[in-house]
Structures are given as structure tokens and as C-alpha cells.
Length: 91
Image (cartoon, rainbow, N blue to C red; front, side, top):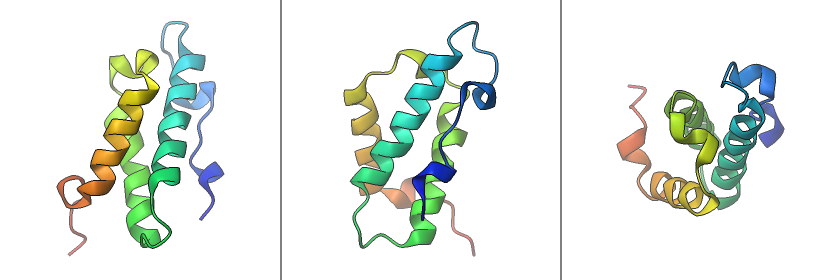
């Protein structure tokens, strides 16, 4: 799995009234944090679903441009500790 497949650019995040660079940086920080915190024993499919969850959860949130690193870490840690709360069963 390659984390760079998930990273975004200013063009991908869309119009954020001049904050496109900040939004792209924060999104990428969330992707990197989730990837780095995931243990080596995590199933690839689960990690892929969690990484996809990042876009679905954050791209529409106005707070994304100003979210702090500590809050990103806390959110990623919570999601990794409780994946069943965030992922829908494929069954």
C-alpha cells in the first residue's frame, strides 16, 4: 500500500476561499497520521477503508483549514482504536 496514492493537492480539494493550500496540507497530514499510527498488523483492506473515510469525513468540514496537529492525532487514534464505529460492514 502506498500512502502517496491518497494524498491531495490544492486542485483536488476544490475552492476554499483562498485556503486551498491549508486544506490540502491538513488533509495530507491526516492521511499521514492515520497511516503512521496504523500498526503493521492492520489488514490492508481495513487501512484502505480508514484512509477513504478521511476524505468522506473531513473534506466538507469548515474546521479542516485550522485543525491542529494534536486534534488530528487524537481523531486518527480514536478511529484506529474503534474501527467498527467508523466502518460499515461489507456484508
